[in-house]
Length: 272
Image 1 (spheres, rainbow, N blue to C red):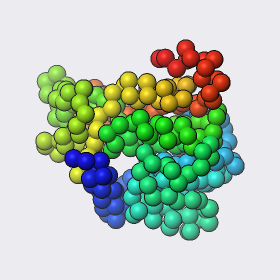
Image 2 (image 1 turned 30 degrees about the vertical axis):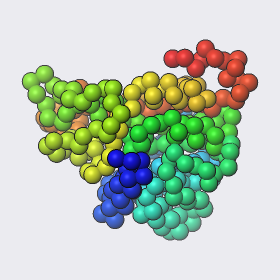
Image 3 (image 1 turned 135 degrees about the vertical axis):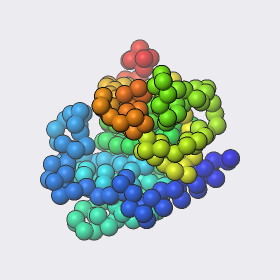
């Protein structure tokens, strides 16, 4: 499957999700908008205030992310592959009186954005939809200013390797770690798989050396890393929370853009 075909498939998947009112495409609530940083920055990585900061919500259409950051006082730009998802951002902005810039493009092609344009790039789970994260990280490094903050979340490789039906020993690994082809869809859809895999989407596994190593080699220093907790010891078998007891589904990374001079003098920091 060529890359353009993959993009078209994934764009149509999210167009349908937006039209169907999928939970990922629902705007923030009044309570969330009243205290937006409590929603988007539970780890405290943003420093307490982002008022006036130039924020790029990358591959983050759907009306939720943009409205939360706008409510926190940021100057918001949204990039997404799906026009239907961006339409939700446009509607929320019009209803709330938020000013934001919307751009429909792939996360690998940010040529429509100036160099060093952003103080913060927020990137929810989406790198699984491209075959390589290298061009994504290169584009983020270009559009973010020196010292800028890049916060991204990704599907953990083991989660994409493993099945969704619990056996006697837990959830088994069924797919190769070293693969350059899409990860097959779940053989038998389940509550867990429907939460973890977008139906019909083409998804790729990215190894840790890609997610962390390529980010560093693109000009970032990793400052922190967390695995959002979704596990519940008493969860029913084969549910999302039960599987998370064995396999953390996501990783969230805080990285800082460094300039050329800093990179040359801090080379050891780039090797994790």
